[in-house]
Image (cartoon, rainbow, N blue to C red; front, side, top):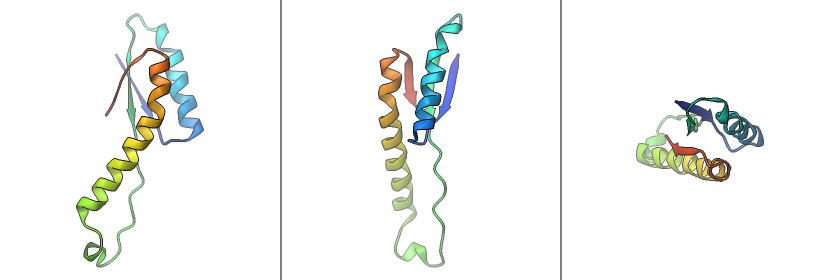
Length: 86
């Protein structure tokens, strides 16, 4: 079984993560916890591609997402839950 938890770096998402982990013991088999980070899209402007490439935008999304996921990962590790960012 898997528990999917949305995180955004806020205190509320960390509280939700802790809640999910604390209730994981209620299941017969200990579930894995998967974290997902959804970023609001960057506004697109005409001729934006002249300054910022699609690759730059993708790297920005990946860096922001990884930073948030790594910030919340210790909470998962402290609870000894299986985890992996997706």
